[in-house]
Image (cartoon, rainbow, N blue to C red; front, side):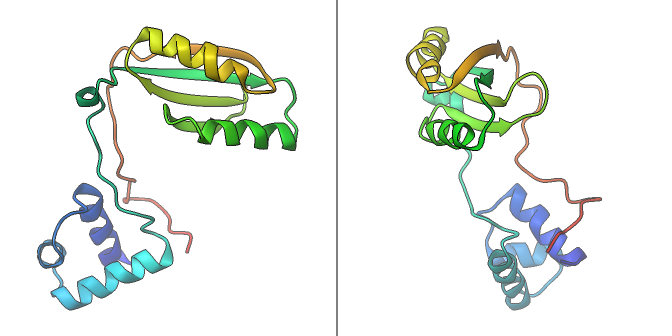
Length: 157
């Protein structure tokens, strides 16, 4: 990946629906070489996929809650089973295996506080191996970004 690829990626992260002609103009290439570079970035896996970002509030998903989960045992089978259960829960927007006091950190998006209660009591607490659950409600989203920082980053291809 060179600086031209980085420019292309910056523009695509800002607007993935941009036409190839407009993208080429914005980065200073002609359309054919620009398209070839985009295809190469896709083929290399640097571009994983294209998505549409929706406004959660327009869908009535007003509550974002961060949930820390600890498991009874941190062994391979328990981790795999927990992760499989979490992947099947559409309310879970993100899930991370953590160091520190808890084993996992989840970001869950739901309509209201009763929906959080239902999620925790009826679904999350019933996942085998869960020993403790702690939640924190987000009061305000200060920053939300989907674009990776390109300046100073390293390409591992």
